[in-house]
Image 1 (cartoon, rainbow, N blue to C red):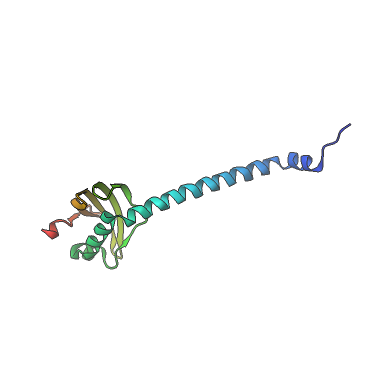
Image 2 (cartoon, one colour):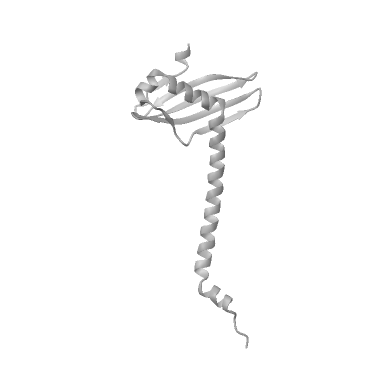
Length: 140
């Protein structure tokens, strides 16, 4: 009669724990991969010309600073899309910002042509009022 080794007996006694730890390890690895991808996307957004320009314009606008207070910080989760080459591209972004007095979202619509970005919309929408401040109107 053949007897089972100690390792096999241990595995049979602890199979639930082995499966649970395997599952948790897989979940942690997938979560780390998703977080890494999100970080890379956010880094690309934050380094883009439309993002940097929009944030600079909002921070330099007297009406926005009066409404939100100073300093104005960017939120972590900007949404939208950017496509860009050296000569052309498009950007459509929603950038959360906040100051000591409240929060807002910067909406950016831009197109890159002949190597230069042209902004169609650059608006700060204050929360919770929904008041909109057109940052391009200040340049006109």
